[in-house]
Length: 141
Image 1 (cartoon, rainbow, N blue to C red):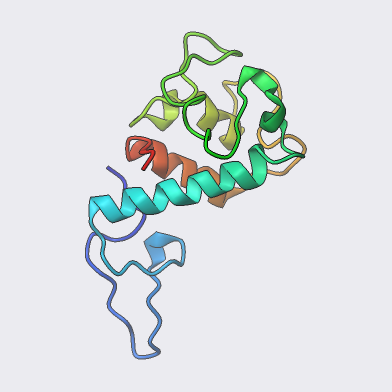
Image 2: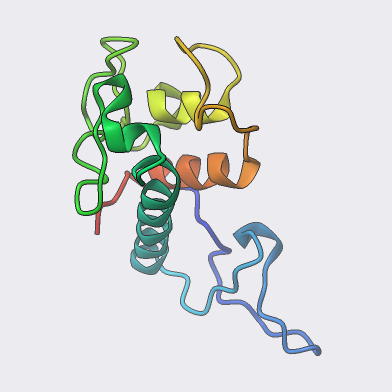
């Protein structure tokens, strides 16, 4: 499992910073699998609500036959067959490279239609977040 932060708690350097190079700049005080999964889940849910499911987001209106919304961020994705590329799953827990949502975000081929989010440049931090979440088993809590 790829962790969002190092496996050992961060040690504060002399300047009292608690960021790690491997955690995207977010300090990790208790790096156990449960806290990593919860942090990933909260961050992914927030990004889905902010980017994909809001009133301007494509999936708030069911683009690709995948309607997302607050309280319904994960069920339309996890283990569900992709509308654009069946029998590939939208999110196959534990396997980002076999997860169509990740491929759409990564935008490096192997997809139908446009990259996600439409009309936006690829955001490496968003791609990495979804990669880590899927690799962690796509936890929902």
